[in-house]
Length: 168
Image (cartoon, rainbow, N blue to C red; front, side, top):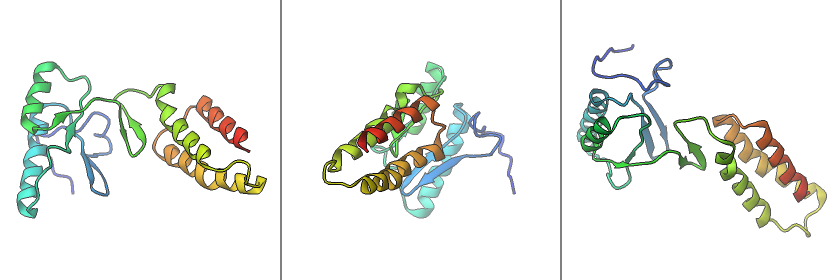
């Protein structure tokens, strides 16, 4: 059942799917349009839930992220939430989150993580089969995690292949 609440507006990229939150372990991302009434309603619901569950939002660990929001509205939302202003892009679970399409350089986080894994393995004492198995199980697992979240440009796939070939 969908309830219509006139004070709330979905984030522009989430309205079609009616997404208002994403949760992972003990993290919660609340999504709304960047207007004062929508954010006020989200904060009201969050506070009511906190009172019922005897929980409080940890303001030291909470941030708000906004893109394309004017200064006055931005300031009102900051005051309304009490959250620190976070800057985009932000890295969450090793993946960059941004309000714009990711640039090729934003994928350097993945390349750096793959390179760190490769550099932690003993090159000279591993057989060819062991190297292939490490690439298949570890590096491709990391790559698949990214693929499940973001499209990876073909040029970046070529960089990853080159890393793997160099290791073997």
